[in-house]
Image (cartoon, rainbow, N blue to C red; front, side, top):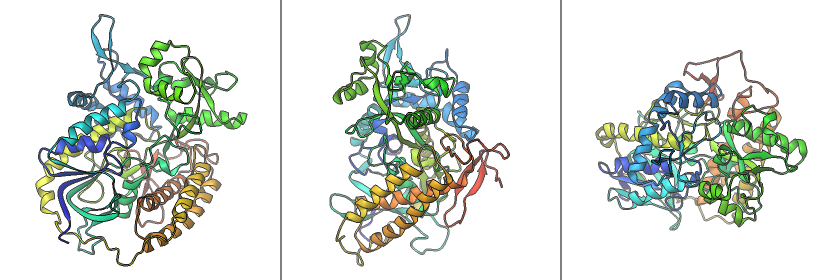
Length: 553
């Protein structure tokens, strides 16, 4: 037990949420940040669009941003969360500017230099502040620079959290609380115990559960799975956002074509050059992502085609190179010149709107000492469909809120810390004799999730997916019990659990709403109030809770 490494704050995840939280706490607490790969290798790095905030007081308003968020959320946004988040948008953007994030500037009509604001799908105003088309990279690298030189932060790169350590798991008397984590050093192949006064899950989403995704390989739902195993509720896991436009090319690895391309006039076309979005929504290309993704999926199936085209070639070359330098260069690399021709695109899994329930506005989960922020958390902001560029906004706002809450509670949290935790026990396991089980199960899981639990669903498809998940769970459980853990095994164990939560949630929602569309129930249920899908560990069936928090039958 003497080998336990001790900290005040354990932050799992090195994205915008985790790094901004670490910076806000590092002056007053001993902080450790764990990253599965290099520090910045996560979804935040690849966010192209920007941060949505009502910054232009003459042309925009907090109330308008709230209205757009609620409209996109299809009746499931929690009003108090939306107002809390949107009102704090301008202040967290100013904080990023103070950290040195190089947002794009432009000269207005008077010649004065101002931050350029773009418009994306679902927004009625230009309110997305950005750094060209690589905002996530600009934020991540700026925060990384600050973190690496801060003496109060210890970085554990190439470390994957295996599980949370709780009083209940150690067989200790109630009340239960989070005591720390077990984490695998991927390079050394050893699992180490780390104690903390509190643990923050900032692990991102779970889109790697699908065959085609815009997310990096790290998006395997680790935080959601660990919290569930520790007894935390999750909500709205059926709402998986598929980004409408990822580059279609066998070697592009689902490279994202930012929504701002459509915001600046890009049009979606069939291969024969025919526009089609006007047939699906009066807002056309600027409709919310769920509508655009379903429209593309419908047209692809109707015409038997494997992609549609996105055309912004009517804009000048100078405009495209200035506004979309990353996308422009990447497309050229794969043989497409977007200044002269349309580029082929397809939808891909992009964002997990559900996650670990936090019942307050400070990131606290059901388990004392455990927080969740960013994409892995369910705050009620996104409802049934996330409004574009509200994701980075949520990361930053709730990192700030959690930092304030932890700062107030830190003396009490420190008093409850366990400085000695049991070491990881490998006495009854051996090295794996073959790895084909892991690789085969990984491929099978992602394929049937794409085929059966994708953009358009049916009850029969969901049941087929559930049957296969049950078989995989048993195989993975046996493998996990007998062999030493590896990065791939930890991720596969988490992914199959997240897949189960997605399918259970989707089966329980007998309506179509937002990102969840089922042919068996193609319309929203108007007979009952809109409800969240809440899953409770060890409970046989999900509990339904209305968007306002009241229980529904």
